[in-house]
Amino acid sequence: MTKARSAAVEQAEAYYDSPDADAFYFHVWGGEDIHIGMYENDDEPIVAASHRNDETLASMLKELGPKHRVLDIGAGYGGAARHLAKTRGCHVTCVNISETQNRLNRELTRKAGLDALIDVQYGDFENIPAAAGNFDFVWSQDAILHSGNRRRVLDEVTRVLKPGGQFIFTDPMQADDCPDGVLQPILDRIHLETLASFGFYEKELVARGFEKVEVREMTHQLRRHYARVARELTDGYDHLSNIASRDYLDNMIKGLGHWVNGADKGYLAWGVMHYRLAK
Image (cartoon, rainbow, N blue to C red; front, side, top):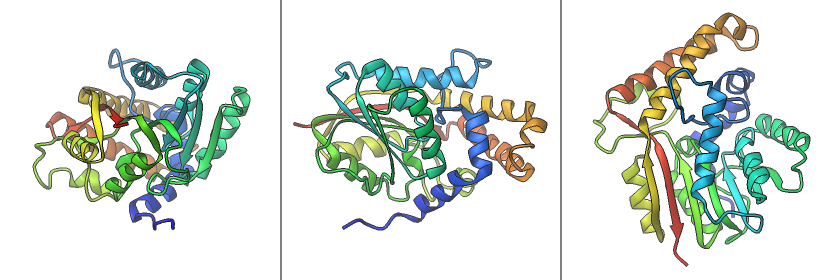
């Protein structure tokens, strides 16, 4: 039986389906990729840094090739899936709660001629629409924070992976030593009660039979990305107000500032986490 989704997932679906959010994330945040970028400098274009994130994670999956099946949970517009299918020849299933994003994902995938290698499914990562042991790799970029029950997400990842399968992901998190209460402005903005941490994921994944392959702490990239997006949004405010409401843009600028401030104070964390399920 499918379990009920958390309120946080329901809120995330409504948010990402909204015209304001869709316009902002596609035109400002990164286009086909709406995760945190990996920048070589503060002025690098967001799209280039976002693509570097895709290839960095892909390069860590050294065995990945045409015979493998990948599940991307929280796939957004499908930029990572198309990168993996095109460069590694693997089959990718995208699971995503926003049908607005899914429609564009399907359109871009068709235009890229990758229909045979990419499936786009409506669904959420608390109830992954897939049989047990169906995937060699599970992939996720900055999506799991939107769950109100991250342990259930990890249960689902464990269920759908084959024995020996690999899980690679990034997620905006709080520092392991973050003081209580200091992230409330961020949590209120994204309608969450908590953020995870490196320690949380390590403990929970090990308890589910995973072993750590590699963890790269890259919190400076979170700070750089939110600051870069805020600058892009501020510089293009007048133009962007033609495709998204000013109230939305004003609240986004304020929210981005909370993330930058939290990173500057050492309250936040971000990086790449790569784990392997026991055989």
